[in-house]
Length: 187
Length: 181
Ligand code: SF4
Image 1 (cartoon, each protein chain N blue to C red):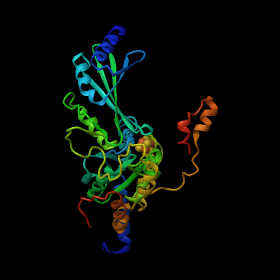
Image 2 (image 1 turned 45 degrees about the vertical axis):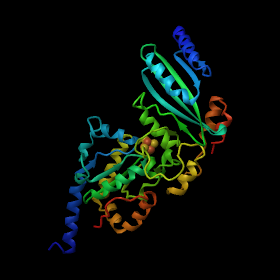
Image 3 (image 1 turned 60 degrees about the vertical axis):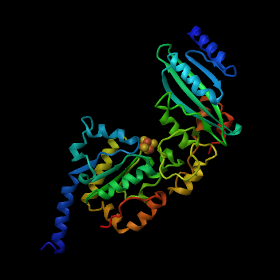
Image 4 (image 1 turned 180 degrees about the vertical axis):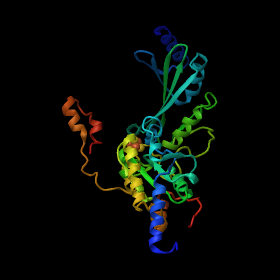
């Protein structure tokens, strides 16, 4: 497996010198690439036997003003997962369209468009995907305040204000630390 | 004769007794709770011994089970389904999500209090309720029917404007037929 991985790294870095790789233990290999290289890299590795697009994941790096798209590709022959990671500007999120490489990308791209507002070049698909009559900013963006929206849109039944944060008890029992970013969400 | 008050009472009692023993539950699942319906209906718990059966279409069903969270998108379909059902009809809210939002209390896309949108006759709490509690909820509904207290459908007709206003608040693009009974 190490041999296959190093061959792949060599081949991809040969063609795209500014791609950066990150080798993980086991059967995973990450590449950080420029967004315009994404279609050609995907095309290349598809030819190498990475024929299965498992998923496209999206991350909102609001602090850095960027979205990250992670294309997860699997080879049934090599049994290796490749993660192709590309970043796009949050203000004007326009990504290359990879529908011609994998038809199933259509679904993920529609999801990205609806949930994050990421646009794809020349992408044609019905506008609504899961949501219906949605007029706010895309709901999975981190600057969308879900709770405030829910409170103002829906009825609430009183009685859960005194619900306790069970994490305190769990931490005491297991002597774990809450990471700082999670404390923000404590009630 | 039938207009006579006492005989009407006897007819009602007979009618309720008959209704209570033949409840057809619409096979329509909205949230995770729907997964508890197959074991409830089949050999392990066998709800049929209480006279509860599944029905395939709304027009042939008496009971609408809302099995968990309702997204605003599903709510639209559920309202249509409910309005298509014929009298007598009953609604059971199933799981914490229908009562106060459950673990989706802060979700942008699910309603939290079902009885503001549809008249609920019985709530079953739990996340998710096991078949035993489903059966006990339905038995509760049967006793309400026998006492003539399960009158959610009448409440809905009387307060249709109030329900409609609540429904339209979260379904701005209303493209459904306006029934008036
Ligand atoms: S009450 Fe629990 S099991 Fe039922 S729909 Fe809500 S989250 Fe799912």
